[in-house]
Image (cartoon, rainbow, N blue to C red; front, side, top):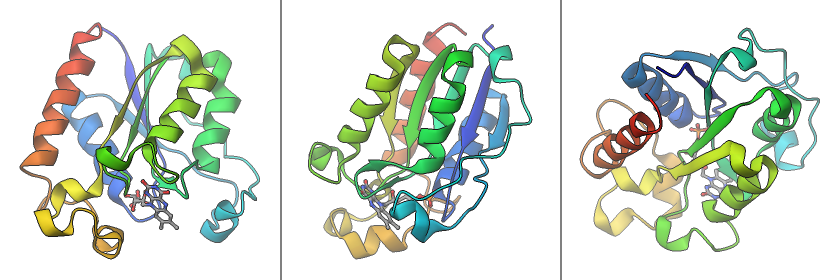
Length: 180
Ligand SMILES: Cc1cc2nc3c(=O)[nH]c(=O)nc-3n(C[C@H](O)[C@H](O)[C@H](O)COP(=O)(O)O)c2cc1C
């Protein structure tokens, strides 16, 4: 059975929640990625001082699941630093995001598709899959594209059901098929 670990960064909690669900469902380790300076506004300007050392030895794990948000259509500094710093020690990686962009808009300027391509480009065949969990999945039909609504919505036990739960179950099936 593969040894799996989830690493996450989250600002408002949705990716922390999602990472927790993944770790719980796969009964695997989880660790937060901690930036040396955690100032959101600086990240948006791409100003950062890297991340603190990890508690776990990444090379001991067959599969890393990396989870975090997307801002301004970019791979955010804590996640980019993580990938670059530990590239050599990562065997295989799955990238997961709870983001704002819907699947229909994934290839637009602020879509998660651009970030997925960047992750795939850096990691090449170390990257197994990229999986999105757009916040809109927990919103009613008329609010799915409403930026104001999805910015104010955070994943929790109350809203994690229906469409997002189904996507999550399919995601787990895929991960389990990849060598567990
Ligand atoms: C300043 C800012 C910029 C954002 N830009 C994007 C974006 O370009 N694309 C996207 O899909 N989501 C975008 N989002 C939405 C976040 O990815 C989404 O709210 C995510 O769930 C937040 O995760 P967290 O709760 O773990 O911090 C943005 C959110 C903020 C606050």
